[in-house]
Length: 295
Image (cartoon, rainbow, N blue to C red; front, side):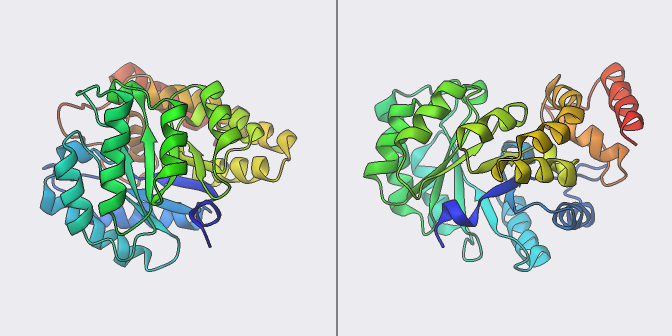
């Protein structure tokens, strides 16, 4: 089974719960993993940006990987996020992290450095050559400061054997359509924009790596499943009530939004590590009001 088939549907960019003292809350992480799986998601992405990975030290990352593998215990596939803006360091990590139970590595576009498209190509080429697992590109220009242009994605897809997919979070449906039109047949295209998933499903994407599916796994994964089955009447019916949630999730910061929702659902404590802070009181109140309206 190729990666496009294996990761079809809803993936969750899972958060990292913290205790009041800001240490990793593994009990809450286990509770969240069970909640997500029991409500029908297809796979989990650990150590993505939503997991506040920049604020985790290396030992915490390794502990989270091992705990996640043990807790999931083969129930669904796991993708591990390994990225950064120091190519040599990322290459070292993909060679040394415990990836035996992972199906792929998700690696973000180098941030802050703002490399040229050739720099992006060479960065990913070295990572793919070093990685023991297929590499999924992660295009998120709103965070990285640089867009992976469709031409670069397609060059990587066609010329570098171990580049097997992309999480496309460029908020650009036209770019997504171009990639879908010219990709290799086994190249995974997953959305990274929760609010655009419905129209992108109509364009032919394979699914999504979602933030919203942390707190709405059943509703969101059912919407994606309906879209993949070309039942867009049902998909729209399931998506419409989530539209306000998408706004609340990203109004101030991710993962501040999703952590507020999960706190109100009784799954985690509402604790983040600086420089990210919890939602402001007025927005948090809107989260509580929204949850009341959907029961």
